[in-house]
Length: 178
Image (cartoon, rainbow, N blue to C red):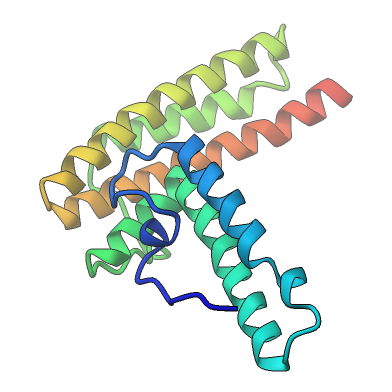
């Protein structure tokens, strides 16, 4: 198997380093590369060839997962810019965002007791999506302007909204299945 090690997931999948990505191009390039370098192509090759094929395939899988997820892509862009995106001990100083967090958490907590839980869930999803869209624009602007520490703060907020959305999806399953 002949493949060169590429410096970034963007380069690997043949797309520009940017917050905005063409997901269809990413998918198309991924499929082409998987077809060309899939480990099954070298099943009868040497141990070294098979190992490289598995490593390359794993890197491709990581690349598509990262670039297709806005939250993972934001963290990756920060990493490429030399910014540590570890937000495990992050605290927010933005009072408007703190208030928004509290309101969204309260909405999520009230869904099961709402007179129409499905409508409450829909409202929750719309609120979370609007917040995510606003934060995505904020991240893009800050990242593009090389305001990486500010972009890191936007990334932390994106993580919160993403987590809240996943919790709402789990609640949706409980409400609809229950």
